Amino acid sequence: MNIVEMYYYFFYKIYSLMEYFKSHGFGNKFRAIILMTFIEGWLLFAIYNYLDVFFHHRTTIQLFSFKSVPFIIIVLLKWFAFIRNDKWKAYEQEFDQWPQAQNLKGTYIVTVIVIFIFGNLIFSGYL
Image 1: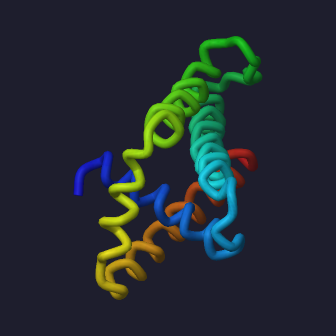
Image 2: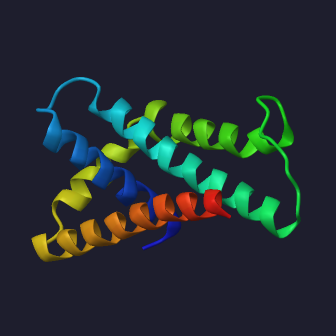
């Protein structure tokens, strides 16, 4: 599995979570995109916190600064990967055909990654 497929699988699992809590309604894709953007933003903030700690800087993130460029790239990536075209739908059909045991294993992996990112954000804020 290459990095693009892993990224689509991560989105597929978040989208499946949205489908589980909301019954096939309009907007599940956008809720999944927003949640995925938040998770990636948490990872960016944790990296910024670690860089500040390791290099002894006490910087703030401003709206139009060099540090906001990766967040803009994340938003643009979401636009091209999920909103502009529906290429992710083909991956969704592929992942739906996986055996249940393999899909459950993927669910555990995605859950551990999200918990690690959130825990990492909290720990980096503590530092």
